[in-house]
Length: 355
Image 1 (cartoon, rainbow, N blue to C red):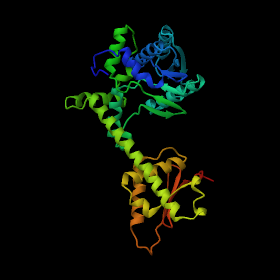
Image 2 (cartoon, rainbow, N blue to C red):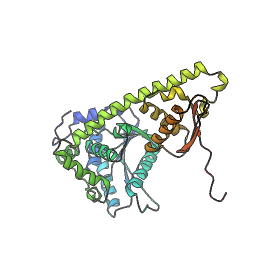
Image 3 (cartoon, one colour):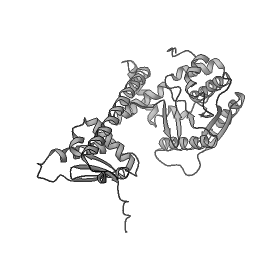
């Protein structure tokens, strides 16, 4: 593919960008009306029309009701979609809106509504218009928040959310190329003023990237870094899979059948075998188990790191005569160390105040 930030995306490139999903029965396109998503709609429609057989396309616009213009913008997307021969549906975020954390809440509502539209339309995939610029911004935001390697891998080409696959075909394409594509096609788009409001995080991060560009930290290089970190993250996950099998095999050799029949109810590791593994591998094994058996959402990385340090210290300190014990809860999981084993299982429900 071309890497010219001022060139329009060609039909041939679009064919490559969407090729992975040509055999699906239906696809939902998330189209807000901004340049990125309108370009997604335009490119996907051209790609689909060039196929003898291909997926049904459904453009979905989520009207958050946060701006007076949003309803009109949704109607404009509908008009364009019908011009391109694509079905359209508007989903509305109804109910009370939060007074703080609006972007995060709006994003969660958007994905929830998109997933609902996908299920109703017989689609397993929702395509979003995230670009290389978005990838760079996500990397920098997570870097500043102290994310680990998996977080710095930023957005994957595909991920699962609310029971559907979220696919991002435009992650390698710059925003400027999408605007050039629309300019060549003579298609207009909406310029959402919140994208320039420095009261929100992403507009401020864009300003930071503009400053970093002079030192080589432009969106292209930041996105390339995210891609390399994603590659490293995938390799580490393979090692974690191997470590899990290693611990399971050691248990199979050392333990009698009655001691292993409760595997589905908890995760259990031999403590001495666990602590000799590399720290990142131990941390991910711990996080996997907590996410599986906990009932309060994903565990915070910093809290998981503190728990791992406590486990390590408990195992490694004290002689053989001293009983090593530890019991903590995290993200709805109970983590205990006793009898030389680390066990992760669902934590008992929290007691309500006054009960």
